[in-house]
Length: 141
Image (cartoon, rainbow, N blue to C red):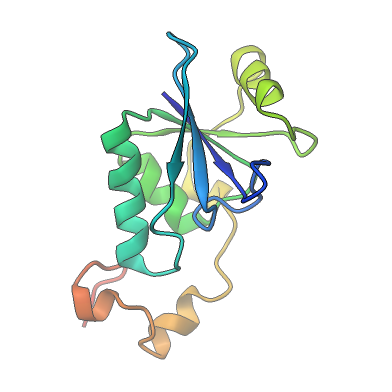
């Protein structure tokens, strides 16, 4: 199964974890379904829930335009294949064609975008992982 993040207009979303929904495509049956992202609020626990939601749906490959380093690291550690779409790729059929003919798989968290807010949230303890113990790659103290 292949997941593609979508915005509310069902266009490809520029930001993976904040996408309100995902198109889930089964290349075997060519079936398409939509998965609501109930975890689009930025917190560590919600991002963990999104990963579980994608795993439960049977997703193995995720197509992205942009993805943060921390989320990319989590997805790679959970066995997902992450394909970076070309900047000009805007339509779903183009994503699937690109994935089939010229995939660009990300293999390292450093290939994601650095977080502007991650260190600040940890410094100010606004990251909810400290209350829930679902930490975003830092040891909770």
